[in-house]
Image 1 (cartoon, one colour):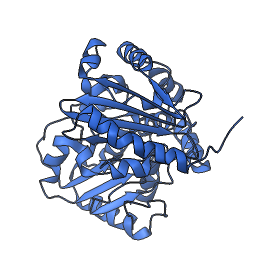
Image 2 (image 1 turned 90 degrees about the vertical axis):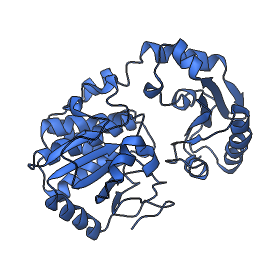
Image 3 (image 1 turned 60 degrees about the horizontal axis):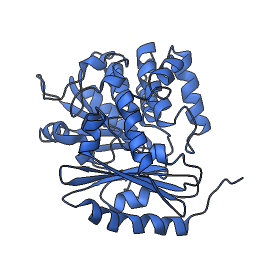
Length: 338
């Protein structure tokens, strides 16, 4: 149904039906999302958790490292665990993860149980690692696809489910500002608000507020920023994170901040952590970072992606990645200009 290169085709009914059968047969379900979770990871995971609990299922949400405190406002997010809980699941559902490695150690522990796996995702670079792959890159957020799935299952949309899903939708689209927002995305937002979701609360607690440590880290990165022919990039390391009062698990890259530079067409941040280099990428319309991310062993979308280069120095990472970004600059062309 899906491939790692093209997940934009409509989901076929057979996949929906397979997923429904697996849910109906399961009594105990684990829902897991990717490490260093963003708002869409937590929102989609908790939306699924709450919906299936309302169907009488025993559901436990999991994420590597537990709940980031900035998402503590998401309904029932205090239930998130990072170690296996009894009873062990009959079924595993992953959300917002393009490959199984992104699920971290807790994901590996769950997958080692050998239970059926449904994955719900929207990344163009998804590797279709589930037994059932509900992957639709036409959706702007995994949370958007979750509501489509709940409709297929005939599950009622409650205020708590809506609040979880709008957290994912608002944060992943930067409040409906990204290039992948469609009429369906806006209709999904309208339905969530009509069901009782407080969108303003999400905006005020996420997009409109930058943690003090992250603000300091952004200032540090900007002071080191390199700009060359439309490519903006910066480097940081674990010492910088600690100096700014940041924890490694609270950090998801600075490329989204750097892409706001007026002359930027592509942005990248390189973070050196314990012998690895974490790469985060962003692009403006007319350019893509999806293929670069996939080639580096990571994943993402046209407009946002990333990868972790294992066992390399910063110099080695820059020597490999910067030419790939410059090649994309030569290939693409801005869609919008003054």
